[in-house]
Length: 241
Image (cartoon, rainbow, N blue to C red):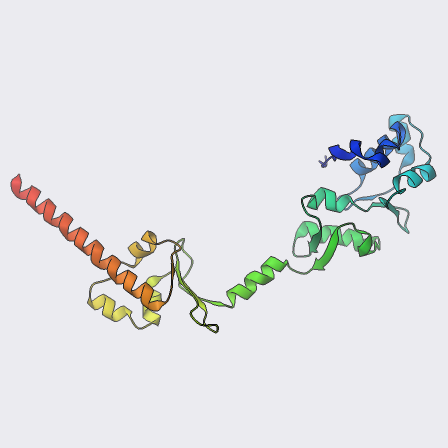
């Protein structure tokens, strides 16, 4: 059973109030029984059988479409609720795009094309896109960065210094220092706390390569001092036993 949003403010709208009881029921019947794209195959007899109400379709259309077009008669006989898609699927937006990489959007678009509904008749529709603008923006951002290592939950990054530079996103510090020819010097100095540094600085952004390098050396030096003091403290305790 399909679930639908219901516009509770409709009772404050003159056009709906002016419909009268039987036509109000008919409108509600249509919005409940149309498909996910707002297309309904007319079945007035089914409505009248279920509700025992009688509706004059011509009079109904005149009232419903009196101040603006709410129902469009299609060539094959179906009716299209022009504001249904926006209200049901995009009701928090003034306008919306149909993004064909989205299954729901694609399904709605197929219905629009199937019944030859002019796009300008779909209330609130701005554009039909192959992919979302946000995805396109993300693709552009991906071209503007270099990544070191495979994503593993922790990363640090280095800002662009000049216009033609790329943002450096570092998931594996060892790989980064290898690429910058700094790994050997750090290894010889026994400064190899790569994972510890990443976990201690998740998501941190550094101004440039020197900033990262110096911060890393400082981190290693300070943690080594702490480690030595802990070892010395343990030794003293052992002597006192």
